[in-house]
Length: 113
Image (cartoon, rainbow, N blue to C red; front, side, top):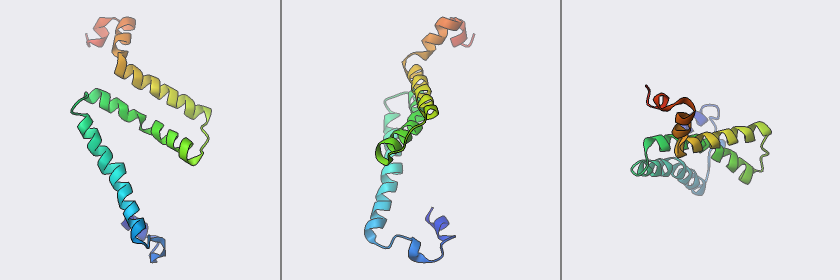
């Protein structure tokens, strides 16, 4: 992304000037991307891809929570409703939403038959 940032700002005054800031930027990239991806891949060894994929749906909720806790953002009712719907959906997926579907629609529906 840094070369893209250089395009509109040809002068170097917009770039970090100290080694400490460059180190923080590199650490941020490592923690947010490399470490997170590595932990996700390790988790895939012990949980199913279905659960791992559904948990990825929680990423926006972590963003909302971080904005609320660390940036003092206020959440709207629509955002809270969306968060609640997402939590319910992920919970149903991971704790037997299929069984609930079977009881409502019949066992043949869940089996594809």
